Length: 218
Image 1 (cartoon, rainbow, N blue to C red):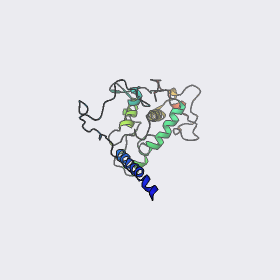
Image 2: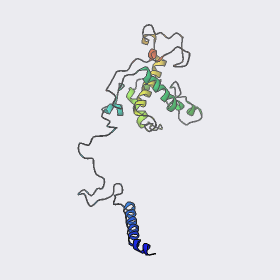
Image 3: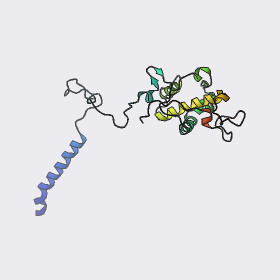
């Protein structure tokens, strides 16, 4: 009993110290987002970035790559070279995210319109969209258009460009002439379906390389 009395003050101090730390950890000085602050002259708790701050991981220095715009106009060129791999990637992303409405061949007769959706997407093969700059398709995928919502949350920036390149390949597949096919690469079958297994059609035969624009920054 005497020993307990001797250590009682120490136990009491330990309990008080623990309680004090818990209060400090639970009730910390802070500001709610966009709250008022009397500490700063402009009364804003949210502080602007310090001048000269360098972005980490997502600087977005290449404006064309992220917007598809040249000034206020849709861009005419791909921001990176179009290769077989780029078009194959564009095809897989297109089949996942675009074909349910636009169909595998881009004529607008996908599964969703066929099941009674009120509006059918326009065919990529109409004259207006055949003449549209490639940046237009990237912009629509990024920001949406009409009843189509933005796909920027589902599809990465590079994949949106790959899809745009693949859409251009779809258009060329339906309207290319024999003069568009490089020498020695004539498609053997008379009218093959684009990119269907066993037809002999390959991407280089119907999609010429796009101009190499600005280097990709991502």
